[in-house]
Amino acid sequence: MVETKNQGMDRVNKLYEDRGSRARELRAQGKKVIGYFCCYPPLELMTALDLVPYRIQGSVHEPITQADAYLESVMCPFMRSCFDLSLKGEYDFLDGLVVPHSCDTVLRIHDIWKHYRKPAYTHTLNVPHMVDASSSEFFKQELRVFQGSLEGYAGRKMTPQGLDRAIELHNRNRALLHELYDLRRQDPPLVSGAEVIRVLVAGMGLPVEEFSGLLRGVIDEVPHRDLRPGLKPRVLVYGTEIDDDAFIRLVEESGANVVMDDLCTASRSFWDPVEVTPDRLDGLVERYLEKVHCPRTYRPRTGDREQDWESRFGYLRDFARDFGVVGVIFYIIRFCDTYEFDAPDVRDFLEGEGFRVLHLEDDYNLPSLAQLRTRVEAFMETIAPA
Image (cartoon, rainbow, N blue to C red; front, side):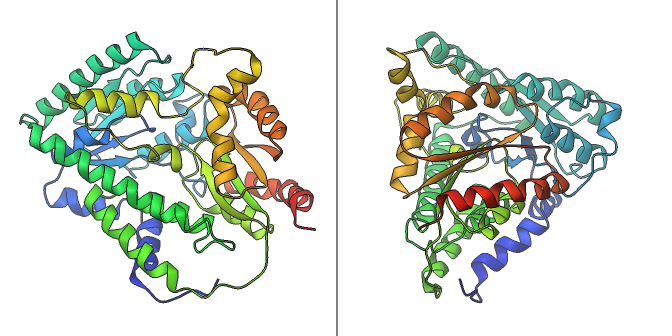
């Protein structure tokens, strides 16, 4: 691709390289910034109270030098990186912290962060690990408690009009992200996988309306690019947390086009909208509990093994087919048991559907990425067009 001069990606790159810069500006203007982990905290509830959600990220570039005094080395390296950055003052601009029970490591970081960093506001969101009627009712009650907690911190009540507008704004943002992903359907894609990660990471630190404006700028500029002909294998990346473009660049430099993903920092965080229901919390429950496909959630077994796999992983097959994928790369951060337990079944299901699969584990740092290059390059040779 030939790079063009435009404000969309120029702005994205500045925000990506200087993460937290806009959140710091907003806090200096009197806004309250709430840090959160994972896909499960309903951002609409924070937006409706004029709080700024900020998704906490780690850094594959920054060695972990302080967190090991507080956390065991066998804990998730991404979470250790996040806490390490907080100890170094990287997240001093956060007024609050929201932690869902997505896994035990994430849950425990709430108490450790609260004790040592002492944010003005903290909340643990108890997200059920099963999907059924009782789970939905339980989660609805949890969202009521979460709403009340946010109202107490913000010092004002959430209005129905405010929540409706927040749902509308976030759904509009999700629709724009779908437009961005649609630009990857062309062969060659109009936007690279590494660029998409940059856009998503840049947007994690913006109020939703600003993120939507940023997306509009990128979407408007990309179709004017000149494309270089030449077919490359189209790849989907599945797995955990990717908040840096380094791994995606490695895959693309090895000869592939990363055209789709199923990552908790990417499509999984926005793919489904919130349906407008008479009780707005019901729509939030359906979207955040039932429609987020994460291995930490157990879905009741349906039928025999093949039918169960179809229920649990059929959406991945559909992603791959819709985006013309020939190979799938599992990117799993070390010690993430929830993904590792699912990986054999996901691999067997996708291979049975005709896709080649590469399973990688990573320590969430740049040196370990370099060690993966040979395996990625060898995988590319098996899926490259003849």
